[in-house]
Length: 438
Image (cartoon, rainbow, N blue to C red; front, side, top):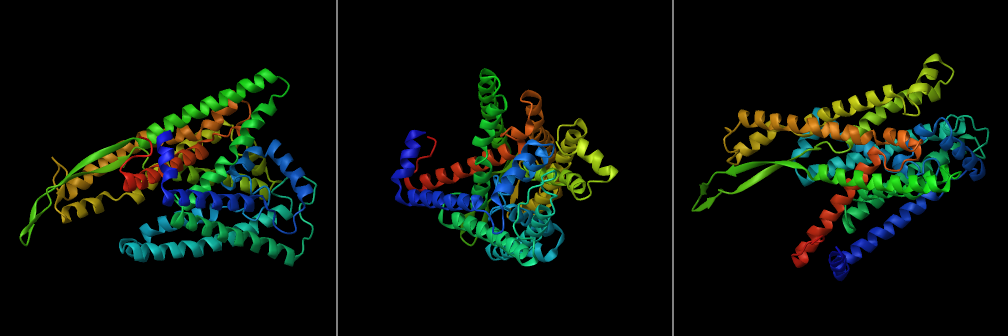
């Protein structure tokens, strides 16, 4: 490991990329702490403290996850990368149902660039909508319910427009920073920024567990160390599952093209156990956030009271059961729209490839679908159990909103970390034919 780090710093090109990435992350974190104009920091701090420790703590913890604490600080980067993630998911789903987008996807690099351009436009549109909703809720006292402090100085139309445009511009800058990292740095830019936002909350969340039991110093330190140990064990389990895959062998027949013989090679199709990644957890969280949002917008209705009891804090068995079932359902749904066995079977048949023991064409597609469904079953159960870690932490620690190693956050952190290490390793092997972890 140490030898691998030394090899990273010996390569001047790779060293420049890492330093460039770190510089971008510094700028990103600075924008996450810089408040937008017209915000009263004194009133904001009082309202945020009440929200994080009150009955709405679980809800605000979920909202604040992908912003690294920037959303409840009403910073320039308050919206973070969520508009970009939402836009990317929408376009990915639309690719299946819109023929024009499906054609662009098949055109290679040119089509991908066009889809990326559409993603940028949709990101800015979503940023305007999200910024408008967020600023309106903050001004009307709906985002910090029960707080009587004024968090804005001026509630005029011009001041509100400036706040919305500032947040929208911040989203555009975040998108630009992510593309800079992808082009000139190390790793996938938006994934690195997401990793930074989530990891930035770990120290504060860990220390808050210690402070929550300040009446007993020994108990506080025991829980502090216990949470770290549980987090490390969960990370090991996630790494084991994320690396697991089923390799389906593929044989390409030999064929003559002119005077040369082509084909005859052997390869495999890697099917991961968790083929859907973290997207089903995000889908399920978004669906379950809608009742909580309804309770905030119409707090005086009878339904709002029922939702506040069962769907806000996230510690009720009904909430977790629905969350568990939604993740499993979205796993199957997302895998079905992102992995097309018929298309893969047709491409294999076109280039003379076949799975040993399986006839080309429709039998190959049925076989791939069969294997994928068998893999998705344990993968969806694993993903649903990981997502319920905050609930189990509530039983052990007594405050799930303070538990830093939540299901979604730890999946993203581990996944991005593994992907970045693989990219560094591949670049080292290109230069010295020696791996990063060797």
